[in-house]
Length: 214
Picture 1 (cartoon, rainbow, N blue to C red):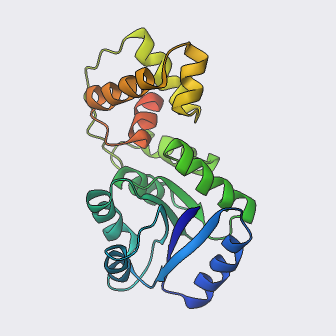
Picture 2 (picture 1 turned 90 degrees about the vertical axis):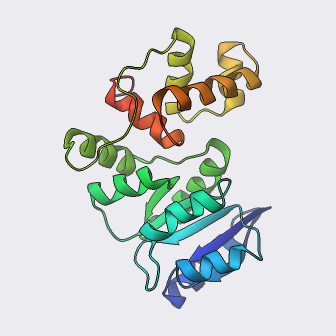
Picture 3 (picture 1 turned 180 degrees about the horizontal axis):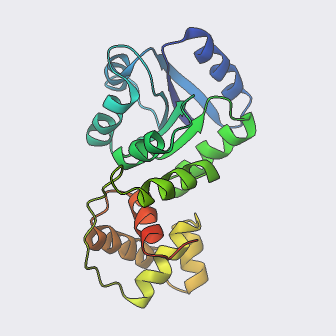
């Protein structure tokens, strides 16, 4: 069962999301919160696997809440929900540590796909997120990643990085490269260390910056 927390300051929206998620197999909303303060307080009592987090909320919004969640609950997955279709904002949230970004008018099928993909692969990049991050990287004054500048990656590490960018799981990468899943995870950890990225989203940004993905 996938335990989900919904955090949004609009009760009607929370109720609508709750009804939608109830139609998805093996998903359960364990609690709702009206802002980041309420979310953090509830997480001390109730475990969640993933939070659907609104961007604009009173007291503590999604921008303030995301880094706190990454610090206190590193295994918790975060998908931002917003009406803001802004490249700079989307890229900024991903850099803060969000695992995915969905517009509030997304179809139910995409919401379900985003949740399952995030829990399986560690992130969900739809076309909108990819475009936003690439656009922001072109305009370097907006996004300034702190990646290591002179990074030498082995051929195997480059292979693993490219497959990570294709949203393959560790097991799928292992099968394709004829190595063990544990070896893949070792390569991933070394990539994070070498590149100076905080998470998988950071690896994808690095790969895009260096022409490894289109």
